[in-house]
Each structure stands twice: as structure tokens, then as C-alpha cells.
Length: 470
Image 1: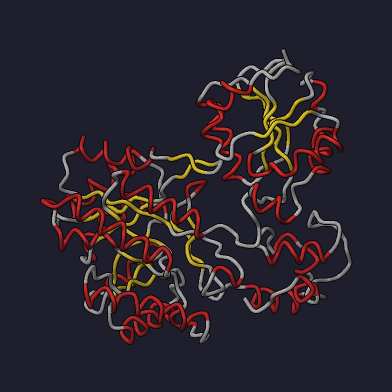
Image 2: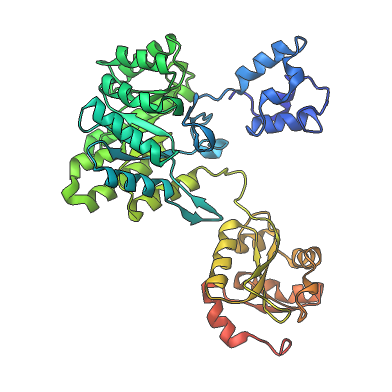
């Protein structure tokens, strides 16, 4: 992206503030365009002859440095690539790394279907949302086109996940593709030997295609050849070698490609990247499954950070999958905006007017930790979530976002006195120094809770109910 501020975008808009986009001003619309929360198509005047030249130029300037490719269809479709920066602190990353877990065509049918269901249904609650995985990679192990096609069909019957069809045999790929061509799968992979056949398949079925070569000159040549033939949805695989110098060189290739696309402006190679951490199993083998799964997770974490847009993995065991998906969630948050929840008064369990009132901030990680610790211990209570601008307790106290006035504002805004008759609040232990001032400003009695919300049950035994509530 070559525009960095709403004002730069605004210069290319009609400037009429017509509100047809749903926003009050063109500048507001410009800001949302920059954040990819609005599309150019939502500004009808921009497509009128009078502004068409501006619209065309704006589309070019807003286009991400790395091409965005979509795999799958409907609500499950996943966009990969589409990034503008090398480092998330420079701006943010937009499309998180897609995790595709494998099945293979020599599996027994019920085993296959069960694995597909496990992958599709997997989820883990984390900071206010359920983390899920993204796609299923169907591998041809048999080498037989009909066997592969049957496997692809069975997978498609069990899931609406995006699919990655994996074989270097174009004939095998096409037979599988016939079963799911309407679902926009990614076909993997064309190389220097089979590229003509894969090019033909990609053109006939209009599906995204992965190109493979550890030789970056060859990879660039393949990308230019496919794009010149009209294939725009390209994914690049520079090879994933799982140990020693091979891993070091793999890491170097990923960085070189991403740098070439973003920093050097080489559009011929500015495509999403695919990593295959499951190659760890080729080294460690199924007889050392635990070791192989750990190494797979380590390699996956490396390329989640630098710079895989999609990856193919094998282990669906919690010790591998949870760290991988959690890291994706953390890397692909916007560093400019703290992860927060809505301020408000929450009811936990079945509180009454004599139940305790706990206080916390609206930093999501803090909130969900405190809420979980209270709920899991079955403490009927109220939890007042104060707007701290999405900052945790200790930092918010130090920075002034959490103070006596913010407590008072929360009490009044959420009409807490209508539900809590004892007028006693329990503030976090990390906010202890605010207790006296808070009592003066709010007129409420303030108790200082534990520094760690996990100790609330023990604290309750000694401190609740206080005399003011009895």
C-alpha cells in the first residue's frame, strides 16, 4: 500500500460528502478504506465518468503489496496474503496465517471421516473468542487418481472447510479437482517438471495454484509464466526443509521473497507464501511421533512469524495445535489497538443485592481471566468492567487510565447502585493505592482484593461479607 493516511486517500475521493457509502464524510470513508473496513465499490460516485480516473488510481494505490488470494467459498473462505509491511509494528498484518491439517487417500474411510470431523470441529476459547483452524489438505499417498478422487469426495462430504489438494501429479490433481472444482480449492503444487499441466488445470478450472521451487530464480520464473498466462491467484512454496542448514536456508528464502515483494517492489514474486512444517515427520518419523510433533510445532511457529500465509501441518494433538493457533492469534492482532471488551456491569451466576461487586479493566486478557476465576469457583457476584482504554490494571493505574474518577463514572454509567445495595466494591490488588481516593470520590466502601484473581476464593473466606453487608 502506497498511502499511509486518511488525508492521502481523501484526495482521490469525490469530496462531496454525499453519504452514499454510509459514512457522514468522505474523510471518514477514507479512514475506513485504509483499514480495509470499506471497499471502493461502496462509493458509487467514484465510478462515474467524472471521477473514474481518480478511482482507478486509488485502486492501484490501495492495493496491498502482496497479492491477496482467497481459497474456499462462503463463510469458511480464507483470504491469505494481502500484506503491506514486513513487521506488524509498522502498521499491522491483516490476513492471519491459515492452518491446514492433512488427511491422506490411503486412510480407511471411517478413520478419514473421523479425522476430518476432528479438524473441522476443533476450537479453543482464548481471550473472548473461539480459536479454530482453517483448511484441510488432502494428500495423494497412493498415487492413484481414482483413489485420490474418492478421498476428496469423502472429505468434501464431511466439511465445508477450504481444501488444499496435494500432489505433484497433474492427472491425480485433476481427478480430485473434478469433485470440488466449485469450492475453489488450492492445488498444490506446480514445479519445473509439471508446470505446463498445472497451468492448463488452473486455467480450465480457475482455481488458485501453488508453485514450488527452492531455487528462487526458478520460482520467480514460474510465477511470471503463470501470471503472464492470466493466472492471478498464485501461492509460492520455496520449500520447507526441517533441520540444520536446510532450515536456515528455508528461513532465508522466506525473508528474501517477502522483502522482494514489499521493500523492493518486485511484483513478479509478491504472492502469498506457503510453508509445510509437516516435513518434520519425514525426519523424525511416526515411530517418534511426540518428537516429530514438537519439531513440527517449532517450525510452524517460526514461519507464522516469518512469513507464511498458509501452512500444511499434520499433528492435531493439543501440545502442537494450541501453541500454533495461539501464536497466530497473537501475531495477527492490531498492535495499534489493545484487545478490549465493552465496559459494563456483568452478572456472574445469580447475584443478589448483597453479592460482592468486583472491579476490573476492559483489557480482554485481564477481563476473561478474572471472569473465569470467579465463574469457575461459582461465586455469585457482579463484575464492573471499567473503561481503561483496553489497558491492564497495573499499567492503567500507572498511566492514569484507571483512577477514582473512572470508578465513579462506571458506577454512575452502569447504575450499579440499583443492583448493589451495600455500596461496597472490591478493587484489584494492583490498584490498592487508589482505594482511599476512590472512597472519597465515590462515597463507596472500597476493599482491596488479591493481586491475582485466582486467589479470590481464599480472599472471600477471610473478607466477605464485611460488616457493611451483613
